[in-house]
Amino acid sequence: MQAELDATRENVQLGDGRRWQLPRILRGARAYVVLLLFVLVFLTPFYWMVATALKSEVQLFALPPAWVPSPPIFENFMQVFREVPFGRFVLNSATLVFWNVLGQVLSTTLIAYGFARLRFPGRNVLFLILLGTLMVPDQVTLVPQFILFAKLGWVNTYLPLILPAFTGSPFLIFLMRQYMMTIPLDLDEAATIDGAGRLQILRYIIVPLCVPALVLVGVFTFTWVWNDFMGPLIYLTDPAKFTVSLGLGFFHGARETSWHLLMAASLMSMIPPVILFLVAQRRLLGGLAAAGLKG
Amino acid sequence: MSAKTSMAAGERIATSGRRARRPGFLRRWREMGPMARKEALSGYFFILPWIIGFIVFLAGPMLASFALSFTRWNIVGDPRWIGLENYRQIFTRDPDFVQSLEVTFRYALVFLPLSTVVGIAMAVALNSRVRGVGLFRTLLYLPSVVPGVAATLVWVWVLNGRYGLLNTILGWVGIEGPNWFRDPQAAIYGIVMISLWGVGGSAIIYLAGLQNIPEHLYEAARVDGASGWQQFRFVTLPMLSPVIFFQLVVGLIGVFQTFTSSFVATGGGPLQSTLFYMLYIYEKAWQSLRMGYASALAWILALIILIITVLVMRSSPYWVHYEAERK
Image (tube, rainbow over all chains, first blue to last red):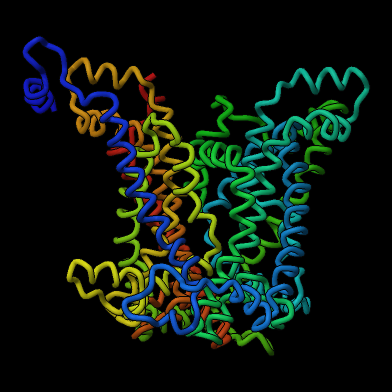
């Protein structure tokens, strides 16, 4: 390594001993070129989706493929609603999202508070077990969970897709607990002296300070539940109960060649998570990064 | 999963610094004052939802799944104990099992290195100090929030052999692209592309890792005359290795969960060339209703993941650089 370093040092050093560098403005330009290349590769599929969603059935199969739909047919989006009960799917997904967000926010707050603030024998061991469960692959529990819910007669209801949220996701509990650990204990102690009970401390001191973490829990849960495909696929059989993702999958199976409608439906299905991401992105990206580094 | 992996994952976070052996649970409980006992009781009360979930949705099902793996059961009627028969069948005369393992591993061998390289490259680009870089972060992260089914459908259309975007572009430079999802040789690379589209998700984590690298290391390297590439090779990569390690472990588990893209795009075909392990479990459990067999498959997979994770962790001292070890 040292030899390599020495060799290059000679190459890059100029006569007067200063290192030669690209002028600042050119370095900026190089960064932009790389970034634009990435954007071009990663966003062209989006463009293709939008363009296809606006094409006529004839234009769909033009050769060579048309880059710009002419004329753009906005009617395709309405057509989706006529072909499949898309509005129904959206409502179903929204119902699941609502209960899951509620469940995760409530349960992770309580559980994280227990782990972050209260002392009890076995706390560290239990927390290690909680972290260990992050490593358990879903497959192992999928079949027996299904059998459990099937025996309870809950297949084709939303209960299997909602109830687990009220026991808290280990990842989100971990996230909340780490956040709560950053809140100074003095605040709790001051409140205790003022006669506040544990629930009051949680409600009036911890929760207001945890809003950023709670938003993160909500956004994560929303996105997971909205995007989930396998859960609804396993548990829901009645098309009237399908979620957006599941409905989209079946729409694809039924109308394999209606790519303009499939793209219109796909486009609509990604609006909620994309908007949520755009609104919460600062917090989300920061939180993701923190979770990734600490994990 | 095992004490070892959970310890390794937890050690960094939950160490209280105490190494001395602590008295047992009962003894501690008896020695507690009334206040401490009350606090402990409310502690258990607060974490109760997780304990219930752990027993009902995780530990219980895991044990049940283990027991079921020794039975034959199609969900109606009673499970019939058949000992190791499921395992014997899987290992000796189940070509689909071998095929699904092969598919999953081949995919892992292509996808994991690619996503690491592209993820880091993207993160380095996103780390440039130029105006408007925030907008680029948003744009490049965007594909990873797209629902799996929608992302898959987009790519099935983009990779259409005749009318698809990619083959059109390849055609400009005179390359005749394959009929991706209809071609047993190419289909798995189609799945790789779908997954790679969401690489912005890991790029953001690499980016955070990059931003944690102290600037003085680069200054020192520059003083020594290191070129841009050398700075990357001898400062960035070692400093980033803990993040790469974390991403690799998470990515491995993710690879074995790959399901939606192959289910929607190919249904495992053509010629079972995208029969991912998860898809195979799904077919056995929900299409053939062989719950015992599917449980055995799931446990084999859990074991494989465990072994690989332990191997990756064992290998980590050779290439992962933890700053803290130096202190």
